[in-house]
Image (cartoon, rainbow, N blue to C red):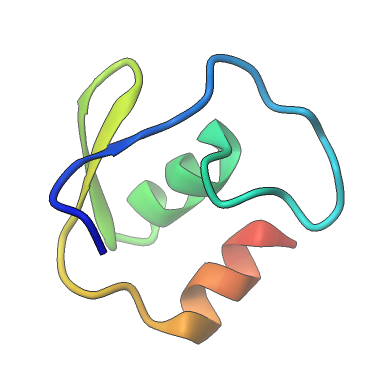
Length: 58
């Protein structure tokens, strides 16, 4: 995982959601796996587990 992730401006609402989707990173933030730096930048707290990332993309 990179140090800082820049998300897209708008969600495309595809299924499953893409890895740069702002909704996915918001879900990871509420789960305590990422920290929001500003409007479009998130910092993963640790290495995000695959199962948690997959669940956030559903």
